[in-house]
Length: 320
Image 1: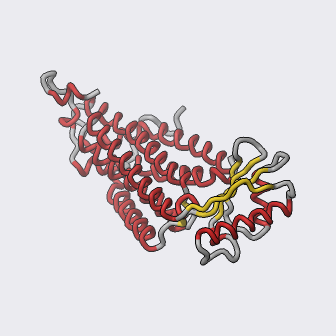
Image 2: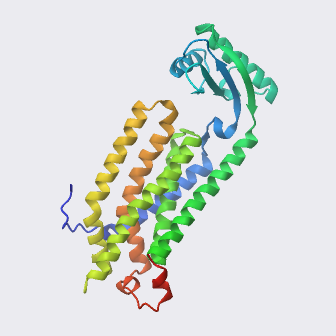
Image 3: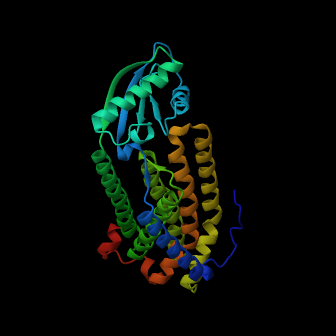
């Protein structure tokens, strides 16, 4: 299945001044937003009160969430635990009226009492099994672990591309991955959507999705460099993007449809993951088409860099 003609020759590289300029502006704007506005961290990062509630009969988490929201509690996180008769409710003290400014134990007692009052008003069979308070220091550890995870993934991908292709491909991939992550995070800082662990996991998934797109284009670049005799690097890069364009768009389209279905029908627990993936798919697809190859051209990739070498060359022996 193809959307675009396999032999189309749209001059994507001819737009490289504008595409690279726009990418740099988006990165700088995203950094500015992250520094000035920051993220609206969820309970996973800022801590809060967790209350385990058991019911005599089955309960729907949406009904529990509705009961808490009707009582004036904002952003309650409700998850089923081991079946349909027990749920965990997590809430930040600031989202419970009258709990701001209290110490940890005081806030935990106040919030848990308010939660149980709201739930027992709708379902008298609700019983609190336990309560706990998670301090913000846990969130600090999660934030730093998340940053290390993103850096580890990006550096690992860079090493893989360096071995599989050539160092210029690794540098181009690194630059575009940093671009994709920053722009995705910048949109979260701009919109102040809640940033929780599902969003962090989705950012890592965006890195993997985006690099897969670029590897497809890079494979085509290597293939065309080796098979073309007189084509210039710009012509080879343009042909590589054009010949993989249908595959890139179709993959993004169907992955996007899957994420949209997850967003609309998967429940609020996966909203963060789905919306982050939708943003990342859009950003990663555009960077695969308009950013990665212009960076390769700017770095001076050439036919000689990708031609097979003699068997005595140890670098060739290490390549797949």
